[in-house]
Image 1: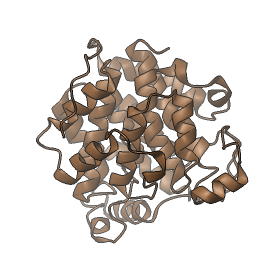
Image 2 (image 1 turned 180 degrees about the vertical axis):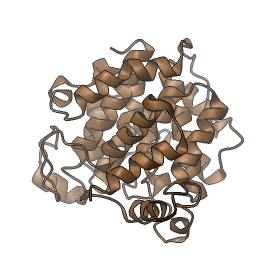
Image 3 (image 1 turned 30 degrees about the vertical axis):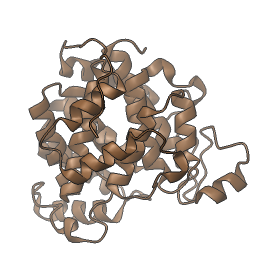
Image 4 (image 1 turned 30 degrees about the horizontal axis):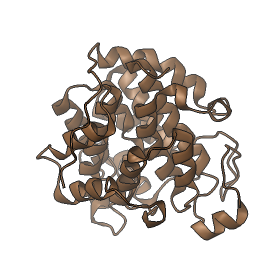
Length: 316
Protein backbone atom coordinates (compact mmCIF):
# COMPACT_ATOMS: atom_id res chain seq x y z
CA UNK A 1 0.00 0.00 0.00
CA UNK A 2 2.54 2.57 -1.13
CA UNK A 3 3.81 2.30 -4.69
CA UNK A 4 0.44 2.97 -6.36
CA UNK A 5 -1.85 5.97 -6.46
CA UNK A 6 -4.30 4.14 -4.18
CA UNK A 7 -1.54 3.39 -1.70
CA UNK A 8 -0.43 6.99 -1.63
CA UNK A 9 -4.00 8.29 -1.29
CA UNK A 10 -4.50 5.94 1.65
CA UNK A 11 -1.15 6.99 3.07
CA UNK A 12 -2.01 10.68 2.83
CA UNK A 13 -5.31 10.31 4.70
CA UNK A 14 -3.92 7.90 7.28
CA UNK A 15 -0.82 10.03 7.79
CA UNK A 16 -2.97 13.11 8.29
CA UNK A 17 -5.22 11.35 10.80
CA UNK A 18 -2.28 9.80 12.68
CA UNK A 19 -0.47 13.14 12.89
CA UNK A 20 -3.65 14.67 14.29
CA UNK A 21 -4.25 11.95 16.88
CA UNK A 22 -0.58 11.81 17.87
CA UNK A 23 -0.30 15.57 18.22
CA UNK A 24 -3.51 16.08 20.17
CA UNK A 25 -1.71 14.76 23.26
CA UNK A 26 1.06 17.40 23.13
CA UNK A 27 -1.01 20.30 21.80
CA UNK A 28 -0.71 23.55 23.80
CA UNK A 29 2.48 22.40 25.55
CA UNK A 30 5.84 23.98 24.80
CA UNK A 31 8.84 21.88 23.80
CA UNK A 32 10.37 21.91 27.29
CA UNK A 33 7.09 20.70 28.83
CA UNK A 34 6.81 17.89 26.30
CA UNK A 35 10.36 16.74 27.01
CA UNK A 36 9.77 16.88 30.74
CA UNK A 37 6.62 14.74 30.52
CA UNK A 38 7.99 12.31 27.90
CA UNK A 39 11.77 12.07 28.36
CA UNK A 40 11.92 9.39 25.66
CA UNK A 41 9.49 11.27 23.44
CA UNK A 42 5.74 10.95 22.90
CA UNK A 43 5.44 8.17 20.30
CA UNK A 44 2.01 6.54 20.50
CA UNK A 45 -1.67 7.35 20.10
CA UNK A 46 -2.47 7.55 23.79
CA UNK A 47 -5.09 10.27 23.75
CA UNK A 48 -5.34 12.60 26.72
CA UNK A 49 -4.06 16.12 26.32
CA UNK A 50 -5.85 19.26 27.43
CA UNK A 51 -9.19 18.10 26.01
CA UNK A 52 -8.91 14.47 27.21
CA UNK A 53 -9.03 12.85 23.78
CA UNK A 54 -9.67 9.15 23.33
CA UNK A 55 -6.69 7.21 21.91
CA UNK A 56 -6.95 7.51 18.12
CA UNK A 57 -9.77 10.06 18.19
CA UNK A 58 -9.82 12.71 15.49
CA UNK A 59 -9.85 16.38 16.41
CA UNK A 60 -11.30 19.16 14.27
CA UNK A 61 -8.46 18.57 11.78
CA UNK A 62 -9.64 15.07 10.88
CA UNK A 63 -13.34 15.82 11.32
CA UNK A 64 -13.29 18.70 8.83
CA UNK A 65 -10.99 16.86 6.43
CA UNK A 66 -13.53 14.09 6.34
CA UNK A 67 -16.35 16.60 5.80
CA UNK A 68 -14.57 17.84 2.66
CA UNK A 69 -13.68 14.32 1.48
CA UNK A 70 -17.28 13.18 1.89
CA UNK A 71 -18.48 16.17 -0.12
CA UNK A 72 -16.22 15.11 -2.99
CA UNK A 73 -17.39 11.50 -2.84
CA UNK A 74 -21.05 12.54 -2.90
CA UNK A 75 -20.59 15.01 -5.77
CA UNK A 76 -18.66 18.18 -5.09
CA UNK A 77 -20.06 21.65 -4.85
CA UNK A 78 -18.82 24.47 -2.65
CA UNK A 79 -22.21 24.58 -0.98
CA UNK A 80 -22.27 20.87 -0.21
CA UNK A 81 -18.81 21.05 1.38
CA UNK A 82 -19.83 24.14 3.35
CA UNK A 83 -23.02 22.43 4.51
CA UNK A 84 -21.01 19.48 5.80
CA UNK A 85 -18.71 21.80 7.71
CA UNK A 86 -21.74 23.60 9.12
CA UNK A 87 -23.30 20.30 10.20
CA UNK A 88 -20.11 19.53 12.13
CA UNK A 89 -20.15 23.02 13.68
CA UNK A 90 -23.70 22.47 14.88
CA UNK A 91 -22.60 19.43 16.91
CA UNK A 92 -20.81 21.95 19.18
CA UNK A 93 -17.35 20.39 18.91
CA UNK A 94 -14.98 21.14 21.81
CA UNK A 95 -11.99 22.14 19.69
CA UNK A 96 -13.20 24.55 17.03
CA UNK A 97 -10.95 27.52 16.21
CA UNK A 98 -12.27 31.04 16.67
CA UNK A 99 -11.94 31.99 12.99
CA UNK A 100 -13.67 28.81 11.84
CA UNK A 101 -16.45 29.29 14.38
CA UNK A 102 -17.07 32.90 13.36
CA UNK A 103 -17.12 32.08 9.66
CA UNK A 104 -19.41 29.06 10.00
CA UNK A 105 -21.77 31.14 12.14
CA UNK A 106 -21.82 33.68 9.30
CA UNK A 107 -22.49 30.91 6.81
CA UNK A 108 -25.33 29.59 8.96
CA UNK A 109 -26.90 33.05 8.91
CA UNK A 110 -26.76 33.79 5.18
CA UNK A 111 -25.77 30.50 3.48
CA UNK A 112 -23.26 32.26 1.25
CA UNK A 113 -19.96 30.34 1.23
CA UNK A 114 -18.29 33.07 -0.82
CA UNK A 115 -18.71 35.74 1.84
CA UNK A 116 -18.67 33.79 5.11
CA UNK A 117 -14.91 33.98 5.55
CA UNK A 118 -14.48 37.61 4.54
CA UNK A 119 -15.07 39.18 7.96
CA UNK A 120 -12.81 36.63 9.62
CA UNK A 121 -10.02 37.66 7.24
CA UNK A 122 -9.95 41.06 8.94
CA UNK A 123 -9.32 39.65 12.43
CA UNK A 124 -5.85 39.30 14.00
CA UNK A 125 -6.24 35.50 13.81
CA UNK A 126 -7.59 35.50 10.25
CA UNK A 127 -4.35 33.96 8.92
CA UNK A 128 -4.58 30.85 11.06
CA UNK A 129 -4.13 27.29 9.80
CA UNK A 130 -7.78 26.26 10.13
CA UNK A 131 -8.36 25.84 6.39
CA UNK A 132 -4.94 24.34 5.63
CA UNK A 133 -5.67 21.52 8.05
CA UNK A 134 -8.63 20.35 5.94
CA UNK A 135 -7.23 21.06 2.44
CA UNK A 136 -5.91 17.58 1.64
CA UNK A 137 -8.95 15.98 -0.09
CA UNK A 138 -8.78 18.42 -3.00
CA UNK A 139 -5.25 17.20 -3.77
CA UNK A 140 -6.40 13.60 -3.75
CA UNK A 141 -9.19 13.91 -6.31
CA UNK A 142 -8.18 16.74 -8.65
CA UNK A 143 -5.27 15.99 -11.02
CA UNK A 144 -6.05 19.05 -13.14
CA UNK A 145 -3.98 21.92 -11.74
CA UNK A 146 -6.41 24.71 -12.59
CA UNK A 147 -9.43 22.95 -11.10
CA UNK A 148 -7.41 21.94 -8.05
CA UNK A 149 -6.28 25.52 -7.40
CA UNK A 150 -9.79 26.94 -7.82
CA UNK A 151 -11.34 24.48 -5.40
CA UNK A 152 -8.51 24.67 -2.85
CA UNK A 153 -8.84 28.45 -2.77
CA UNK A 154 -12.63 28.58 -2.60
CA UNK A 155 -12.76 25.94 0.14
CA UNK A 156 -10.23 27.87 2.21
CA UNK A 157 -12.18 31.11 1.83
CA UNK A 158 -15.35 29.61 3.33
CA UNK A 159 -13.67 30.21 6.70
CA UNK A 160 -10.20 31.65 5.96
CA UNK A 161 -10.27 34.24 3.17
CA UNK A 162 -6.93 35.86 4.02
CA UNK A 163 -4.76 35.69 0.90
CA UNK A 164 -2.05 33.83 2.83
CA UNK A 165 -4.53 31.09 3.74
CA UNK A 166 -5.95 30.59 0.26
CA UNK A 167 -2.43 30.68 -1.19
CA UNK A 168 -1.12 28.17 1.33
CA UNK A 169 -4.00 25.78 0.64
CA UNK A 170 -3.40 25.95 -3.11
CA UNK A 171 0.34 25.35 -2.67
CA UNK A 172 -0.19 22.50 -0.21
CA UNK A 173 -2.67 20.79 -2.52
CA UNK A 174 -0.20 21.07 -5.39
CA UNK A 175 2.55 19.53 -3.27
CA UNK A 176 0.33 16.65 -2.19
CA UNK A 177 -1.01 16.10 -5.71
CA UNK A 178 2.48 15.83 -7.20
CA UNK A 179 3.46 13.36 -4.48
CA UNK A 180 0.34 11.28 -5.15
CA UNK A 181 1.35 11.17 -8.81
CA UNK A 182 4.75 9.76 -7.85
CA UNK A 183 6.97 12.85 -7.81
CA UNK A 184 9.87 12.96 -5.39
CA UNK A 185 9.94 15.83 -2.86
CA UNK A 186 12.42 18.00 -4.81
CA UNK A 187 10.32 17.74 -7.97
CA UNK A 188 7.08 18.46 -6.10
CA UNK A 189 8.53 21.53 -4.39
CA UNK A 190 10.14 22.77 -7.59
CA UNK A 191 6.89 22.51 -9.53
CA UNK A 192 4.98 24.45 -6.89
CA UNK A 193 7.61 27.19 -6.84
CA UNK A 194 7.34 27.43 -10.62
CA UNK A 195 3.66 28.41 -10.25
CA UNK A 196 3.41 32.17 -10.75
CA UNK A 197 0.05 32.31 -8.96
CA UNK A 198 1.64 31.42 -5.61
CA UNK A 199 2.26 34.60 -3.63
CA UNK A 200 5.60 35.79 -2.35
CA UNK A 201 5.01 35.05 1.34
CA UNK A 202 3.91 31.52 0.57
CA UNK A 203 6.90 30.99 -1.72
CA UNK A 204 9.20 32.18 1.05
CA UNK A 205 7.66 29.75 3.54
CA UNK A 206 8.20 26.86 1.12
CA UNK A 207 11.78 27.86 0.29
CA UNK A 208 12.68 28.32 3.95
CA UNK A 209 11.03 25.03 4.89
CA UNK A 210 13.09 23.18 2.29
CA UNK A 211 16.38 24.87 3.19
CA UNK A 212 19.26 22.55 4.01
CA UNK A 213 20.33 22.83 7.62
CA UNK A 214 17.00 23.99 9.04
CA UNK A 215 16.59 22.21 12.38
CA UNK A 216 13.41 21.11 14.09
CA UNK A 217 14.15 23.45 16.99
CA UNK A 218 13.98 26.41 14.60
CA UNK A 219 10.45 25.58 13.45
CA UNK A 220 7.45 27.70 14.42
CA UNK A 221 4.62 25.42 15.57
CA UNK A 222 2.13 28.19 16.23
CA UNK A 223 -1.21 28.36 14.47
CA UNK A 224 -0.01 30.79 11.76
CA UNK A 225 -0.83 29.27 8.40
CA UNK A 226 2.53 29.90 6.70
CA UNK A 227 4.43 28.57 9.72
CA UNK A 228 2.40 25.35 9.51
CA UNK A 229 3.06 25.08 5.78
CA UNK A 230 6.78 25.56 6.42
CA UNK A 231 6.75 22.75 9.00
CA UNK A 232 5.07 20.42 6.49
CA UNK A 233 7.62 21.24 3.79
CA UNK A 234 10.43 20.70 6.29
CA UNK A 235 8.96 17.31 7.17
CA UNK A 236 8.78 16.34 3.51
CA UNK A 237 12.49 17.11 3.06
CA UNK A 238 13.71 15.02 6.00
CA UNK A 239 15.48 11.69 5.35
CA UNK A 240 13.86 9.83 8.25
CA UNK A 241 10.88 7.52 8.20
CA UNK A 242 7.34 8.83 8.39
CA UNK A 243 7.19 7.75 12.03
CA UNK A 244 10.48 9.40 12.97
CA UNK A 245 9.59 12.72 11.37
CA UNK A 246 6.03 12.91 12.73
CA UNK A 247 7.23 12.07 16.23
CA UNK A 248 9.83 14.82 16.02
CA UNK A 249 7.21 17.35 14.93
CA UNK A 250 4.55 16.62 17.54
CA UNK A 251 7.17 16.57 20.31
CA UNK A 252 7.77 20.26 19.60
CA UNK A 253 4.33 20.97 21.09
CA UNK A 254 2.45 24.11 20.16
CA UNK A 255 -0.35 23.51 17.66
CA UNK A 256 0.83 19.92 17.51
CA UNK A 257 -2.33 18.26 16.23
CA UNK A 258 -2.49 20.53 13.18
CA UNK A 259 1.23 20.56 12.42
CA UNK A 260 1.15 16.78 12.79
CA UNK A 261 -1.88 16.43 10.53
CA UNK A 262 -0.66 18.77 7.78
CA UNK A 263 2.84 17.26 7.77
CA UNK A 264 1.42 13.75 8.05
CA UNK A 265 -0.66 14.27 4.91
CA UNK A 266 2.43 15.06 2.84
CA UNK A 267 4.52 12.31 4.43
CA UNK A 268 1.79 9.75 3.78
CA UNK A 269 1.43 10.91 0.19
CA UNK A 270 5.17 10.50 -0.25
CA UNK A 271 5.69 7.17 1.51
CA UNK A 272 2.29 5.49 1.09
CA UNK A 273 0.07 3.64 3.50
CA UNK A 274 2.62 0.90 4.13
CA UNK A 275 4.79 3.43 5.97
CA UNK A 276 2.13 4.07 8.64
CA UNK A 277 2.95 2.09 11.80
CA UNK A 278 0.26 -0.50 12.41
CA UNK A 279 0.18 0.37 16.11
CA UNK A 280 -0.98 3.83 15.03
CA UNK A 281 -3.38 3.05 12.22
CA UNK A 282 -5.05 0.21 14.13
CA UNK A 283 -6.09 2.69 16.84
CA UNK A 284 -7.51 5.34 14.53
CA UNK A 285 -11.23 5.80 14.94
CA UNK A 286 -11.36 7.06 11.35
CA UNK A 287 -9.40 4.13 9.89
CA UNK A 288 -12.38 2.08 8.55
CA UNK A 289 -13.97 5.18 7.05
CA UNK A 290 -10.71 6.23 5.40
CA UNK A 291 -9.95 2.82 3.90
CA UNK A 292 -13.50 2.42 2.63
CA UNK A 293 -13.29 5.82 0.94
CA UNK A 294 -9.99 5.26 -0.90
CA UNK A 295 -11.46 3.47 -3.97
CA UNK A 296 -14.02 6.24 -4.51
CA UNK A 297 -11.38 8.95 -4.16
CA UNK A 298 -9.05 7.18 -6.58
CA UNK A 299 -11.89 6.79 -9.09
CA UNK A 300 -12.61 10.51 -8.86
CA UNK A 301 -8.96 11.24 -9.53
CA UNK A 302 -8.86 9.19 -12.71
CA UNK A 303 -6.18 6.92 -14.15
CA UNK A 304 -3.28 9.38 -14.56
CA UNK A 305 -0.02 8.45 -12.87
CA UNK A 306 3.40 9.89 -13.56
CA UNK A 307 6.84 8.34 -13.12
CA UNK A 308 8.94 9.25 -10.14
CA UNK A 309 10.85 12.50 -10.71
CA UNK A 310 14.54 12.88 -11.20
CA UNK A 311 15.25 15.39 -8.47
CA UNK A 312 15.09 18.84 -10.03
CA UNK A 313 16.80 21.65 -8.09
CA UNK A 314 14.68 23.77 -5.81
CA UNK A 315 14.67 27.47 -6.78
CA UNK A 316 16.28 29.80 -4.26
